[in-house]
Length: 344
Image (cartoon, rainbow, N blue to C red):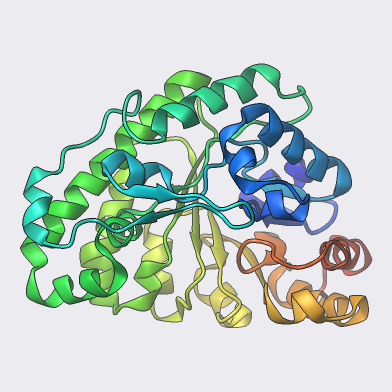
């Protein structure tokens, strides 16, 4: 089986030959290859070649997305009017600009073919669809969840305050955000002619109560998923989400990339029959500094807990920030300890 085949088998809650390994892609791919980040972001050819190079370096794992038009987290905020800052060695970022909620009344849903970096994404996506080698899938990028997008254009502390003081105007902002995402994904689908996955990344619901997560986060996120029926729903959240696992299951998510702060055993017991779990090795500390033996031992325990009966993808609980040897250690652990059938 190919790494992508194993991934799809796990998503279907079936058992592949071995536990699949898949890593969340991010703009840190450019720094891993010692590329200028701005050049990587803006040049589709550089981006495609870099992503292919990582596929070749790690042939025994999948990447999610596989090949894709990576622009980091600047696309949707820029389309709504945020200023963008670039760096040569860090992902680009947008600056919050809605300092007064009254400005929400002036916001309009952007045109993906005209506004911000959305046209650049569509151009890069078309280039990749046309030029990527046939052995590699080309996926759409992650989109920000509506609540995450709201914090990008309004600011995190301001959005938290708005939940208490200005909920009606915050809902108006979230309405613009969710419609922005739906139109953006529709434009991406027009380029490719069809999508396999819908990816949403949003850490913010994990930082608030169940009530606020539902009111300001998941109800809008579900609208995005429901607008594209038949696609595989993928949700990424770096925050601890033990207090809202059932809500995530109710989203109809098929693949959930979750934080190392979550207890894997309890997460598996509560939603593992509905959701394929993708994680959750700690991505920064021991993954950056640990020995191969330490990382393999951690992965062995993760496999023992998460892999029985399928529905488990071994990875870090976030994007990959550690050295190549740590990635190799996770892949090797899957080969050593992850061959199905796995006894509980």
